[in-house]
Image (cartoon, rainbow, N blue to C red; front, side, top):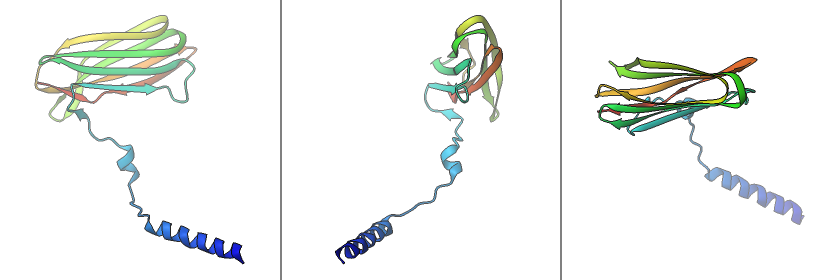
Length: 157
């Protein structure tokens, strides 16, 4: 009899506790989407890892930093798990004009029998625009694996 009474009291307490919990529905899109394409900071960075831990490519990283009122610094890395036959890095500096981004300048680099490819670039740019960096990172050692990175826009004023 005491066991039944304890069980009933336990169930009643659980119902009372659950009754005090409020549940707020949240749309999945609000959690997963980041719709802002610019930042108020002078720096932005993006890193992308190879899906399911690729055999060749480990990750790619790009960053942009406002260095002065007319200058940005760009850094980009393609990092491999091991020495690959060919490592690729393409860097696109994009400028926002009339509400949309377009390529302002671009660079393409490759390295043979390398474990990584790192580039730092300083660019003089017109002021009064948002700039962001898109990167294409790839490694080939038999199969080719790639990722794309995209920073947020940084205002150069």
